[in-house]
Image (tube, rainbow, N blue to C red; front, side, top):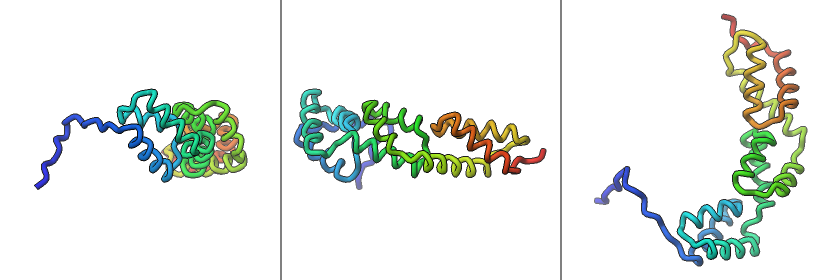
Length: 174
């Protein structure tokens, strides 16, 4: 019988050689887009020295396994379509991943503003069906906060919410 690992036992840190790290990252990058920041984080976890990690990363970039511009474009598409995020939240997430500002700007510039507005409207309609409120004013405030939490700019959220609250009678009567 296999012995179960203790729940609170510290996990052993797996170390990799530069060649092992390179092949592991090549496999990962072949399956899904990775940024330079993701690769650095993984290599730090594998115990690679900074110089070795940079050499591995340089080869991955040179052979186009990793491309931050391509990663940012895919990230923007995914977060817009699947998660319904706005530009501010996407920008913030990409900055936390270490993507350069000019690369982020280029990726966000490719977005369709009308598509973003439609996605915001869908998100707000979905939220309006589930929110508990006693007045249209309360509904409007809750929807505005929700839209802002998704990362959309204030003017777009305000316009979309104003259109929804005029045509919505979903507040509960107390």
